[in-house]
Length: 176
Image (cartoon, rainbow, N blue to C red; front, side, top):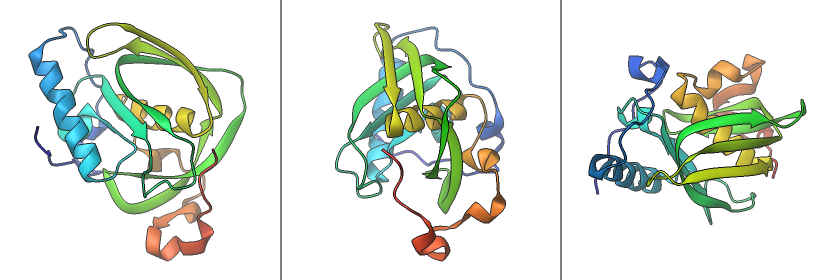
């Protein structure tokens, strides 16, 4: 396993649409191991392959006793390949988000509160889940990376975007 360099906002690859995964092999397994090691080393809730310089439709996520997100329910460890998201209803909620590719900053981002996500796991087995709350937010955030979108592009009011230490008490815990 290797902790890889995380690309930062402004690097061209982060603005591209990632390619679908076509082969489920040792190379994909190595990629996921590196993603996992990188995410954990930075206390991330998730990471997408493009964030470590690989333009493939792969995300991983998990929230369990994460110091960056102390007020949310656990999200199970998931490797999601070639994901498809379907919002369930029109309801959205705003929540504060950060990103390993946008270090030190946070923004208030609207996301669908409930959704269904489908895809496959590391071995090609189907995944089909209906989720809500923070779990839904994490999935949407990570899948945005696969479409070349970073969360600041979704912030509605730039007064709700800034450095964590400057925002301070304005940031309320993320909704669960």
